[in-house]
Image 1 (cartoon, rainbow, N blue to C red):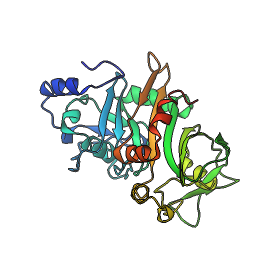
Image 2: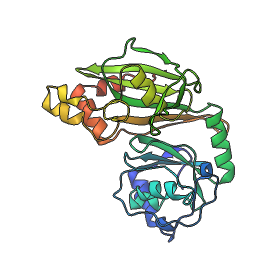
Image 3: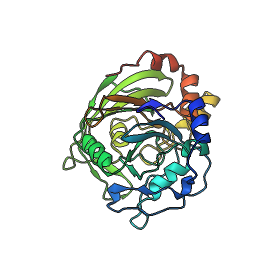
Length: 294
């Protein structure tokens, strides 16, 4: 058995995969409750593994989503987002997933990597969604941004609303919904900075808009910042700062008790493109020294 909330080791993955059930991952029943529909059986697309299984708990499954995996949901296919996420796991991870219906608890943008929770069944889904809605779940993100924020830490509280001129975007809007983002600069390098953020509300594109409004758009976020890497003299750093996606990573989640029996802290390792930037900018030590950020 996989211990509740515990990381799944490589050896345990291999052992459990050997004893896994015969149901194939692409026939697993999945549900996206936020779409308001029960799902049927979906045939997941065949895509290269980009995500990873992090933990299996009595209430949830935690997955490190790879950048490029879309969690968008069409009304005609309410379970497709979960099917895509499951299909992005290595086959050995897919075989470890529980047999009951998996439901998407929250979302990340397609270009954002990091932690995503799937609930195990209707009651678990209700409890976890309520915890998110009550802001009892602490969410910490990492982002590589252009420039150096001043002051080095603080809080952005600009209300946000839809951009009427571009339906893809959100914008700062005095008549919009209250939005709060706490931030702290963990490291700086020429042209860029590493920023940790705690999303205290859950508005669409909240972190991206708050950073852009502060003059520090996320590296790779063409929707809110546009390319700026052309002015970087270091050729290798310039290449790394043109990643083809926003360098935003859902790093940590702290889940409360209740609904969990014991509060649980989860962390998603950063992907290769972020790790390469960290190495080039010398930020790994800064991250190691900021295990307790808030």
